[in-house]
Length: 379
Image (cartoon, rainbow, N blue to C red; front, side):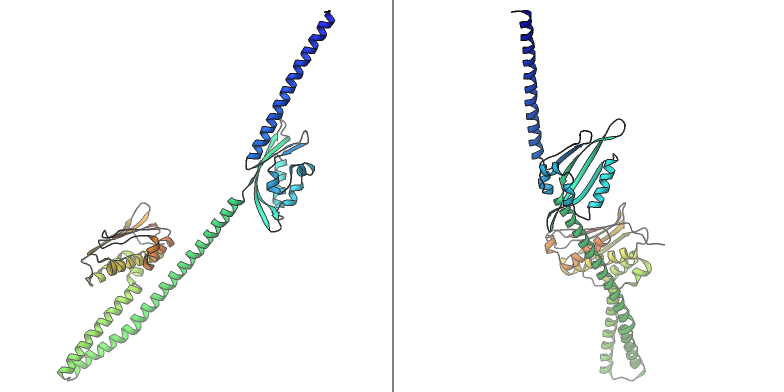
């Protein structure tokens, strides 16, 4: 074979090898592109890229499920997606596009039209690529369907609003109750109580000034004792409705007065009060804690058949801790079985921003724990 023939053969071998490598690389590239497309199709997101230098754009197949447009439609008109954006969101979205063109990364959420009365929420995250001269060359981004998250946020916000409304309604109801209790207590003290006291004074005057037959005198004595008991009952009832000590001297004095009054009933053998409060609390906190203690004692005396009750209230690092403990028969503490009194106590604790816990089981007594953040009386 001549030198020219050998040279031609060598050229053919080199070209063949180059073509083989080129075809092999082309095959690998096609496989990589196919794998990348499959990967993009498998993820729950839409990926897009815009190359400003080469004036090319790419968007993954997820654009169809997000905007209801195909990849081909997007390539023909890259602004077609704007027609799908909610009119209220489009101005804001266009402003974000301007920021992106200035080289600023963007994260934005907007609504996309699905049908005449149905909208989908989309989150768009876009990142600019700048060259050495800080000139924008590429933009790439990801689009996510966040409709379910938005619905969950909406439900959470609605529940939060309903909770705020319920708290406001409960607070208003309790304020009305306290106002009405004060009014009734005043009427009992200044009205019926004073009238009964006047009758008692008149009866005692008749007994002392007139010559009354013995039988009638005994009857008048019985009547006087009944009047005294009625007057005392009205005082006790008036005190329970609106304790003057609470407003004048604070929670500690009011609880001492309540315990002193209940000890006279002798319903329980031992009633112990342990108060460790360093200063006065906010009036709303004092009245709510007082009512919780009042309701706890009422429940224990009516239902627990206990022999002793301990009331403990004091300062902690977190605020105020109240504990009411009895050694009664106890009960099952499932929330669905709680009576109105327990629910009212829990509502009062929550209104103060605190927590309400109850520990009880049959034959093991009951413990009520209320923890409240520190709320001091303003000077």
